[in-house]
Image (cartoon, rainbow, N blue to C red):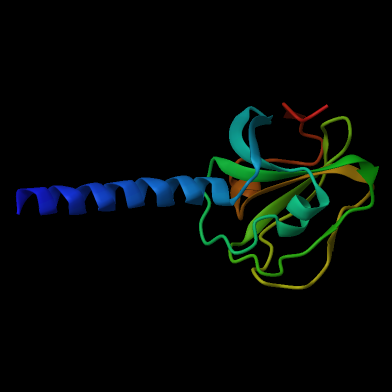
Length: 148
């Protein structure tokens, strides 16, 4: 009986560990850290067209010190949407020089409305809704730690 209980325990322990590992890898995004006007964020990097298309879709929660950085490689006209994104976000549009050029606050979850950058940008940083206001992020603030 003791052997059976140990076997069951090991099975569930290993299963939980595997599931946790799969869940962590399920996103498949590289990670990095950014400094936005002195505030540190742990971000997932959406670098490829597939990663940028997937973004934060189907997520139901994100920690306040986390985010996702979309890197388009070079400045361009950028349009975003919230299709299949279940959490409201603040979108920070960032130029090649690391300066915030626009902020789309408190986006509407699952909306297919187009959210466009005010001018060509290289990056978009998505954070939990309300953080840009709470942390007083403004157009002209600097984002450090961006990919080169």
